[in-house]
Length: 185
Image 1 (cartoon, rainbow, N blue to C red):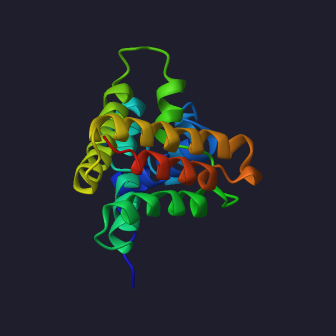
Image 2: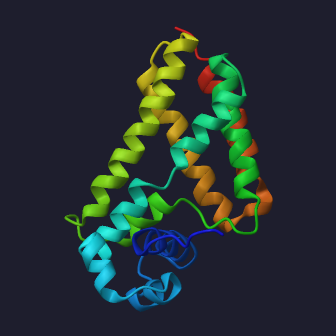
C-alpha cells in the first residue's frame, strides 16, 4: 500500500502544478484545496505563500532535464549542447507547455525585493555555468559570451513557443546555436 505524501510534499506538488498552469498569483486557497492541507501547514512549512513559491523555484528540477539531455547525448560538448535544443523541441510542442516558470515568476513579481528574484537568478546563473563549462570543453574562444548567447536563445524559445508553438522555435534556435558553437578566434 502506497503512503500518502505529507503536507509539505503535497503543498509543493500543488504549488508546482497550479503556479505553472495558472501563474504565481494563483490564490492560496486554491493551493491549499489542491494539496488537501490546512492553512497552518503552509505557514508551518514555508512561512507563507512567498516561501512556498521560492521553494518551488528552487526545487523545480529543470536544470536536471537539461543535464539529462546532455548526458544522453554522450561526451562531445557540441552534441551535448545541441541536445538541449532537441529536448526543448519536445517540451515546447506538448499541449501542457506554458513557458518557463522561472521567467514567468521573474516577470510577475514587480517588487524588486521579492525573494523569488534571487532564486531565479541562482537558476539562471546555474544554467550559464552549465553552458560555459561545455563551451570551454568545446574550445569556444569566449565561453562566457557563448553561454550568454545560448541562454538568450533558450529564453527566446521558451517565450516564443507559448505564443507560436507551431513555429517550432527550438528548431530555429538550434540552427543559431550551431553558429555560436562554430565561432572560432
